[in-house]
Length: 418
Ligand SMILES: [Zn+2]
Image 1 (tube, protein in one colour):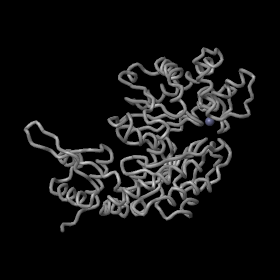
Image 2 (tube, helix red, strand yellow):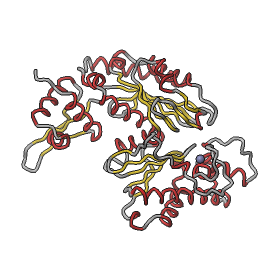
Image 3 (cartoon, protein in one colour):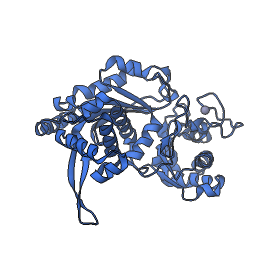
Image 4 (cartoon, helix red, strand yellow):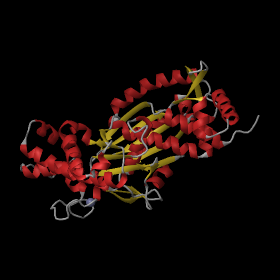
């Protein structure tokens, strides 16, 4: 048997991960591998059940071309999405399919006890059937705030200041862990399964408890020296504004346009209690705006102006073809989006606006889970040991599926108990 280089497998699986189904010709063309290496690798991956032939396409010349895809169940992942007010856990497969999921509310801004994250992951692991356990590759975690190279997290919304998340989780689990900033996992999900699949110059912006951007320029993520690129929320929009930000400055975008701050302004103007400034309250402001409540409209206009200004700066700087908006903003698309776009158009350079699309994410609230999975898949492919585990023979698939099905029932009962 000729030796198959890790890099061949990596290139082929990365392409299948990104495009989901491809022909042999497309693999040769896109990876730049020679046809013999491709044939050899595809035979190996097919025999082991890592990839499947799913049909044939008729080409122009009448030749049939086989279409190849990943075997959904060749690898499993645990995906965790830590949001400012919620934690989501999921058990996912190689193509981003969610086998089961659940979420827990947490108190925004109060220090999050890491034991809750450990318990959640342990619950997933405890409930795995043997067939699933053997093919569990890694745990992917999507986390807000700033993550330094040592895996320490600073996130105001989780009450963490250089919290050693990676080290704490590493003590609790043998399974490899991959941690990434949530805006980056979200854009990774958009490029994998969402509306940025064909876009090399795109920006994902989440407006939720905080505001952050993840930027792709010419097909590459913008990361920065200390992985802090995209801290859009702390751009000072108006230094004279009374709005004080979590970071200590005044007039940051986040202090005017994040979900808790939209609610805060509405509450202040209507004499409501501002003590409880949970991000989810922003939905109430959207609802009031729908009923033409002038205070709600005034607050949303101010937030939209600040966001439009920030998007215009990004547009002029980065020249993207696509801006995707996510977070709580999904719930207010009808009353909020056109206001933001109006201000973006007023401020950005006309030439940069040409052909620019502004869209709301189509992936819904599970975007962080999908992003954490995408991160885990991509990172695992780069690790030779994990790569070979993904490519190892998928055995006993019938029995495995049967157990999975039985298991799912058990799981849904457990879900109500959680
Ligand atoms: Zn700030």
